[in-house]
Image (tube, rainbow, N blue to C red; front, side):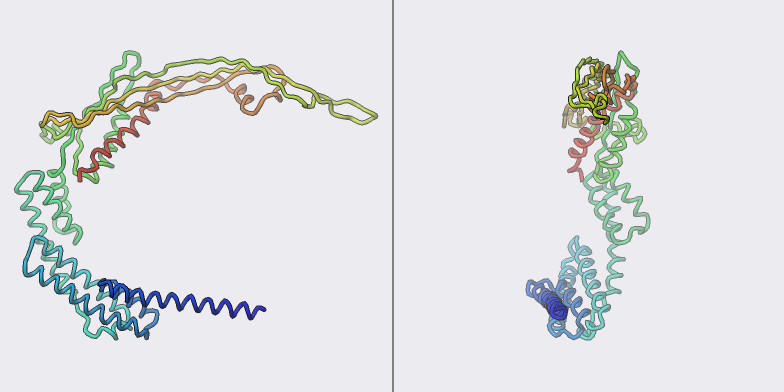
Length: 388
């Protein structure tokens, strides 16, 4: 019986391996038939690493590499003939593809037996990279010299290409920062005014968090530069591209309400004592009661914040929204008379509590601005999502 099971499992395993091998081989052929010669080379090479004598994989590799090489060299020759502005994009892309094919075949001994004349691309790729670095760096600086946001954005594209080829080329880090600064919208975030006749409340924490979010989450990935009024003055930006005003339409802190509740609770079939019956001690069951006097204090704080984005250049309001926020602090306590066993765990917990002092007004203010902060930052992120 065990031998039968073993034989059955062995047959299944062999069939699975056979199917995987057939799929691996045929998938290379399918890619070849679709015109994906690079993909066919990769698949056939992978197959030959597993089965060095596989005839189908050898044929696929031989034909696919020949056509892949021709396709890439033709594209490079055509780009060299026309010398369009994306010449280096085309040549680098094709030389890099040839380099990847070369490395794949070099690390496959069986593949080297099939591809006798492997195209050595290393020197040409290195030379093209050097030429591309010099070209993009110079053109980027030429764009910067012309001035204006449009040219700065073109410069940034070229500088980023330099970084993608060699991240530490010359002073490219400085040039990228300069191009991004000149390409970006300059947006001043005015200080949030505070007017409270009742409390001395500071919104510094709230304002700082909004600024940090704009700097770290929005500005990092978009062509915008957020500045405080003081930063704008230092940078000599007299008329920014946009101004963000954030202010409270209205807010209240510490609206206190106390609710008292008196309830009676009863539970039946509870052991209330014992008795001796025929010389044996037995439990006596009955009803128990408890009266609870409970209190619930709520301290509510809320406000509505106004978000406005305007353009001082065109003198237009680009966005205006109202963002609400609320926070309710709750304290419950009480006492009881009677048998505590008549109470549930929650009811008993309330009676064991005590009246607490609510948080300070500043803390209540911070709490009700948390949902405002979440909505506000989400709206700003969405609004500036297209500034790329």
